[in-house]
Length: 360
Image 1 (cartoon, rainbow, N blue to C red):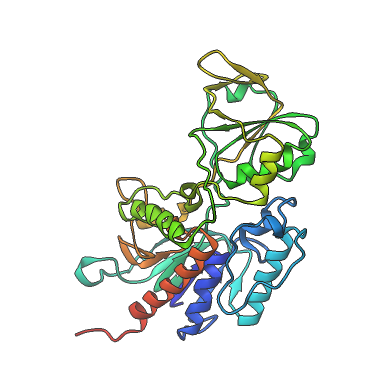
Image 2 (spheres, rainbow, N blue to C red):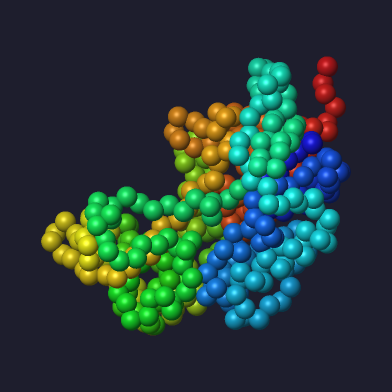
């Protein structure tokens, strides 16, 4: 292959579309490897209670708009249908389920200009190996939920689950539920669960509520903060994590239910609940960790892309340590609009790298 794209979510499909537009042939010029057994990316795994009316800021894929959908339709149905139609409409070469285990330089690879990595990449999977001149990594974060360490968690006799496992409020009817996290996911859980259960909202930092609409200028400023981190080789933060909480139906509903009285992060857990250093305690039956995700990039470890700061330093979408590797849906492009733009940018750069005449 010229290019292997890993992942068929928003970022991977955008990259595939733009590779196609720039003349890369589907099936022998490039291929998309997806670990899931059907289209939809992370959307297939969202809670059934997340409806299209509650989806915030979804951005169309290039070349095919998201069709109208009933507001009460689960997003886990509507968005995967859209992704499947997108793959069919554009004839994208998606192979699934194919799980990528590792990406490494081919053993006979030679150095590129200036001693930078050259030669081909070997993409090792559970369905064989692909040899590629370049790679677009679009694996997102959904498969790596983050749960913070809290002393005593092993003693807790109730239920512990991450937002990735949350399937709606009915599991918590009549219970006492602690929701940990200060982002939109936590607000969704509070808005749904506070109607049927007693809730406790806990965040590490005081939540930031944005008054008025979330303007394009505010969006660009948020993206710039995340972009600065990846330029410095620090671990990527989510764009959503720096935007604050904007007005939404879920936020209004949580406020109506009195569920937004935030408490600081507890210091330890007990058999029956949580406790703070000042002696306060709260009995709870369940804890929902709405504490975010980490990039799924472990398969790239053989390439040695990580910086001393712990992250992968990017120049645009290109890994600074290896111009053959582009990351989309990572850091500043980890949103539907950002992923779509990053797919276009990666395809443009790879066209220049692989198709431009070689200077002599």
